[in-house]
Image 1 (cartoon, helix red, strand yellow):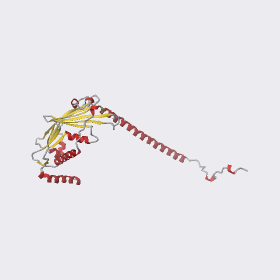
Image 2 (cartoon, one colour):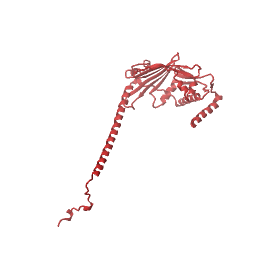
Image 3 (tube, helix red, strand yellow):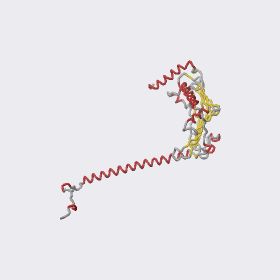
Image 4 (cartoon, helix red, strand yellow):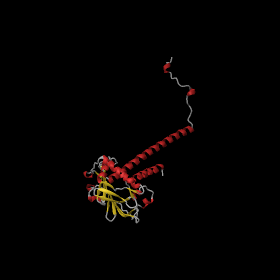
Length: 307
């Protein structure tokens, strides 16, 4: 007698799938495989394109960082000026009040605004990002800004610095010049010295623009004429342009009143003085305090309601 445990009991014949795949089923299966392959290829292509684009962008940024930065040197460290926080708060309030009054039509601050080199550098030192990376110099008829910014957070910028200098100088003939320099490895050794403060083709980038500042014939507004300039390493021809501020005066910019209220700006050793305009405009005194407050609140209200 055959052992029952060795007997294989299969499924009933009626339950077996013995159908032969038709041509339609084969076509449907093949179509599914084709769609899956296409989707997979598109996904891989998109991923590869994104990776390649990021790599190219990284290389471009790293190349630019290497071009416009220099290796760190001890002479690139800028000093800091510590000013008590209470003094900085008073300075901010004084500047804000002066600007707010200038924006009111027909009102001029009773006193000129005096800003010292100590106050400006104190604000810079108070900033975690700018402290030790910027320094302002106020000289007679000249204001300049030194920049020495670490670029460790940029691709290819580890151990390197973005080092630049910018200055505006007034001359007796009402001309002023704007000089911008980005130092190169060749010129970084004498960065921030008087020799490096002028236009120099050896810098990575150097530009010099000339302007003439005056007032209109009716003495109602400032006139700024562009007298030309040059840039290195680019060779650009820059034509003269008269009355650069004309479009600003023709607009409805809220800063027009403030600009009209300024008579002149003078630079002394260690301070800049913004002189207010005299004439038909009246000074803000104690008797005008109420009208100033009312005008300021009305101006804020108009802005809130969209007028």
